[in-house]
Amino acid sequence: MCGIVCYVGKRPAAPLLLDGLKRLEYRGYDSAGLAVQGDKGTRCIKSVGKIEELQAKLNNEELPGQIGIAHTRWATHGKVTEENAHPQTDDNGRIFVIHNGIIENYQSLKEELAGEGHKFKSQTDTEVLPHLIEREMSKNGNSLRDAVRKALRKVDGTFGMCILSSDHPGQVIVARRGSPIVIGVGSDEYFAASDVSALRRYTDQVIYLEDNEMAVLTLEGFEMSTFQNERVARSAETVEWEPDAAEKQGYPHFMLKEIFEQPETLKNALRGRLVPGEGVPKLGGLVPVWEKLMVCRHLIIVSCGTSYFAGLVGRYVFEELTDMLVEVELASEFRYRSLNFRPDTAVLAISQSGETADTLAALREARRKGATLLGMVNVVGSTIARETDAGIYIHAGPEIGVASTKVFTAQLALLTCMALLIGRHQRLPVTYGIELIKALEDLPAKVARVLRRADRIEAAAQKFHKYDNFLFLGRRYLFPIALEGALKLKEISYIHAEGYAAGEMKHGPIALIDENFPTVALVPRIASYDKMVSNLQEVKTRNGPVIAVATEGDDAIHELADEIITIPESHELLTPILATVSLQLFAYYCAGYRGCEIDKPRNLAKSVTVE
Ligand code: F6R
Image 1: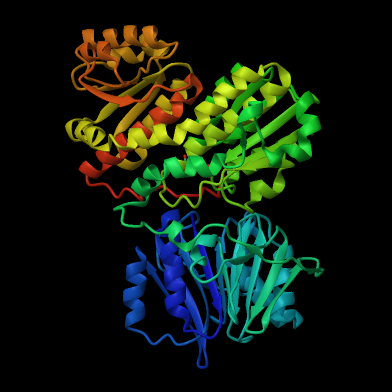
Image 2: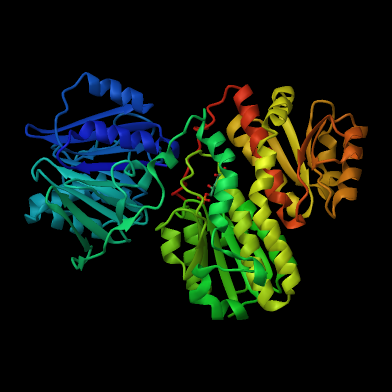
């Protein structure tokens, strides 16, 4: 969603800020702005639309200065206008604030401030912040740092923010509650951002602010403290991925690059985690809760979107391999359920970003109910990673494409590992473990094999991309993959698609089938094969076009399908991963043929930090 970048150093700030904003573009935004401070004061420029439009404005303006803050906004409160873009300022235009998150009590604060004579120019919740800070400085004579701290005590809601003041040159204040801020430590220069990818090109040394912490950045260094004014000392961590991991590396889109990276991301996710001889995986991140996990019989998985579908696959896998009773809940619905929290309940949050507001809210609710909290996240140091008792990092590298691809398949592989680990301690024999670990080791090569058939999948997309509706069908582990295939297609190509459990077809959706309504059927040769074949026969009888995702060498399926996408034979538990890769490519090529903006689908944001 919104993006934050800040620079304090000796180089011209504006180009660095723009570069940082460009690297955050993938998160989704509708307007942008920046404020740069130089010897002659602070200049602020904003624009609606793409960063190029901000850049065009900048090229017409002198914007010297070596300190600055910049923001991309994804509108929540107030329309997409220049007035509503950030930075937001106080009455005198001396305090500049950029903000991610939502100030929940902004209405009452606004009324209070307006009653004291403050004038508001925007419809944003953010605008109360510079006014509150100004009030603390002018009424109570506070320093900028104290004014920010006191102002923030009045605020309910979430924020990651940067503040610049014309009256206190040479410093930027950053603060966090519920929305990420990372400080980048360079040599004689400092950065802050909402996401490491904005600053990774300039440094690999980072410090994540925790909730209710702030920092003052100056040329001399930075000082961190809590909102209660206690000093915080934390050493920098090294970012593990190289800067070019967040570049397209010759691919036309991040999404295609990330689809093609999957053999590698799967290897990275599994590296050091498989112990073939013992038929048991090693997941060091679970060690802190191992004793509790061993007696735990009830697992609730909470997540959103694609990560939710990973959870749905996980349920089948856990139930197959362990004695646990597993429930999978949409994080946004979790609070409305009155779930049975027995003492042996663990809650597992699955999230690429580790910042999804609904997933976090669900976790906090589970914490109140006394559950053991586990996380499976990709972004190191993210809020979910920090708020859980233990967890598993996905290690898939930065995912820039808005549609999640490589992280989803890595999540599936790691859920399989986690279930196998627990299952081996409960009831699975070593032979089973050895066989599944061998299949996991072979998986990257099998994914590479699916990718080698990209041209066949592209041909299918070329033939089918003009249809306006699709049905995706699967059974058991492949039912959630039907949901995921449909989601990928609608997100990036705007084609309407429904994912269904194939057994449900006769209970309604079959009414839609005709020659204009293609079905994508997940029909590899696994236990559900015969039942899927019957479903396809029903579709064919009604003249519905069929694209079948089938096992290599399955000649029988030719009679029922208009197009066949093949995947290699593999362990049944891993077929969802292979089928997914083919559906990702299908969605990608359909979107391409329809001329869609694949990496920036309309209305979508990469990390959904509002509930
Ligand atoms: C779809 C997609 C979203 C996310 C969802 C949860 O391609 O990316 O549906 O899966 O917003 O995000 P995370 O996994 O970051 O919690």
